[in-house]
Length: 483
Length: 125
Image 1 (tube, rainbow over the protein chains, first blue to last red):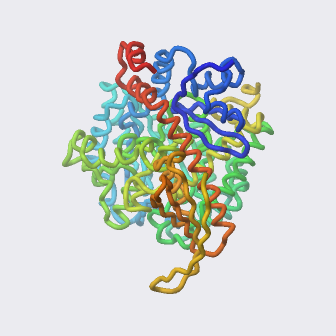
Image 2: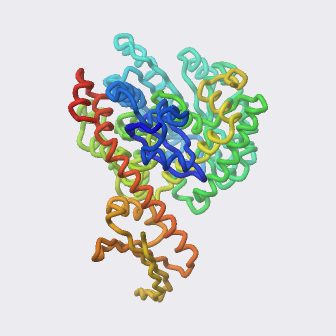
Image 3: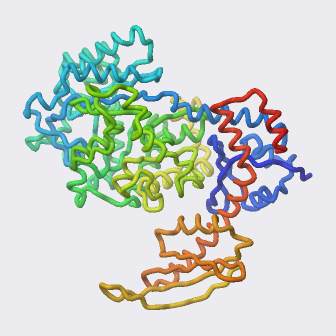
């Protein structure tokens, strides 16, 4: 029986012999080609199972439209809830000094013996904390970056103590993360980190024969030994779940990601973030040696993901962090703000970074651009001379954010993956000279589309992998989510 | 729906002489909207040089130029283009269909109103 029905907002894409439909709140459904034709002709039988599936996934509506709109509005607001966390991530460049000289260093750090004038001083640190707490967000995450933040640990302590003091009257959820190469960690520092419930985020590129190629001291020594020792020590002192690591894929590791994953497992880490190298800082300088194509990266990423899924099916809980983020967007109704992939962009409104002198940049990449070639496009003020309103409600930030809404960017506006995706105005500026970019030629776009395609192929065709994905999203063992 | 005209030509540039291959197809504008064709052109603009022109008789002329003589590649681009133009046309018609519903969802998400049912009735959705 055919009966009139209404379309609800969705986009579609052909995938082999099926059509993938995704609505504005992220529900998805695969339809056979014939059924899709019937759907758009409004010939589907409203009592058929297929129609009921589409109705339950809010692609069509045959009943009360106002209650459906109301429900979808709630779902839409939930998906965009990260906007209410304006601005929750506050990154502090504690020092520009670093004891390492990694080949691909994005931060363009300088020698650790260069003098304390490359450090953030206490007065600036307190001003930055004041600025962080001026944010309306109920959740403040302070991330210590560098250089190597452990080299100016007194200021880290000052920030933590002062933030706790301010929070007595603010009552916000307050988290701390220290991004460190971990080589300089000492017992006083780890005790303070433990006492204040600070998470450690470090870098591990793989086993020594991979890690030591790029991650070396200024004297030229590999850092693998001390990094692996200190990861184990930190896990013992503050707990396994408080220590995470990420890797940067280089031409030296791109064909050996399975070995990198084995190394992470050997280090008792429960996840990996497989990160493509970005063309900033030193990486840009050595791009001819360090760069690679998106196709090459995607082939390796797909192979690594396949390996991780096999491990999970064999009973080892281990996840790829970026896939988990995207799957959370695909499989759950929850909001997952991720400053590098949201619409509007999280630059400035999701996270900011404070330079050692108090300059405020909308993202680390914007700060690197200023350091690399003096381009201060992404600097939105300074904590000493500007107030919260002039920094966060200024014309410059509004212009950048307005240009980053993928709902109105050519190519993104009609992309089926739009509800899960985002834009990177800084990357666009670097590659195309404007904030909006040109999606057709954007590696950022190609990479994300390719990952979405891999995930949807697996979701549609492999039930066991579906269970693995659910275990990642819910952070439960595979045996607990198996249907 | 669309007729194909083959044209092979040589392009001169100030630096050297490049051999190029071009093909033109005609789309009826009562089937494909300009918006759908523009979107399809955008989607494939990194694969070939594509130009559009209006012809008389309600036809839209789309020319694909590839700076190589790989005819299979050019034919594949044209095949992709047709599929994309068709899909964009479907999506544009869908967008037109659910446009007001989408606006109501987003408005209701951030500026909820009490009388949504009355508004829906008044709009005769």
